[in-house]
Amino acid sequence: MSASAALLETHDLTRDFRGFTAVSKVNLSVAEGTVHALVGPNGAGKTTLFNLLTGFLRPTSGQILFDGRDISGLPPEKIAHLGVARSFQITSLFDQLSLREHLELALASPTGLTTRFWQSVKRFGRFRDRSMELLDRVGLADRASVPAGALAYGQKRALELAIAMALDPKLLLLDEPTAGMGIEDVDRTIELVKRIAAGRTVVFVDHNMHVVGSLADRVTVLQAGQILAEGPYDEVRADPRVVTAYLGE
Ligand code: ADP
Image (cartoon, rainbow, N blue to C red; front, side):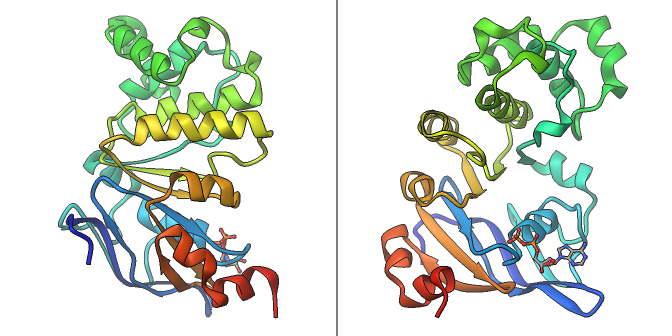
């Protein structure tokens, strides 16, 4: 058992899609203040699990406990309010809005990036300082007035991280934070995630084992919807079942 209490736990968490079980009796435990990686071949159920944890999908059966509270089946807004944030996908950025405006929107929108709150952002302008702080944390303060559409790919991903941090979440879920990046951006992102993960609980999915090994305190390997292995990176990487799952028989 881990010395610190679990912030997130699932009990026999299961999700079926018309008879096909994408996540099957998963028992996950994430200790408070740790960084936890979720890995596994394509189709293993990682995205489905993230969607269950954030309320975008309802479990078929099983439970999700967050901070001691049963959040199974709660809507995404409610789960976000309780302190679970997920990194936004690039498709949710607005090309014409500046970086600072993105952060102002994120701070004004309790459940996600939407221009529904734009009028109140404009009217009060009260999120400016906090927006600049967040941009500074991800190294984008000098680009605050630049439209998001003008950013390079790695910078867009950094902006997503700043947006996910806007609600100061207890649990930060990162969906492939280094996907599609070149080696320099990968290393920059590792340092960035380390910085924002300090004192926070993070669960991330990534296919890059260098990233997993650099960031994760613990690793859970999923295969065909089930947990195949769980433990510290070195232990999991050496597990023959994991090697077989990745390389085939
Ligand atoms: P991963 O993220 O690990 O690649 P997914 O969670 O996306 O895996 O998918 C797990 C399995 O569930 C896959 O076989 C996928 O085809 C299936 N699946 C995911 N979403 C749906 C859906 N909405 N309807 C039917 N099958 C789905």
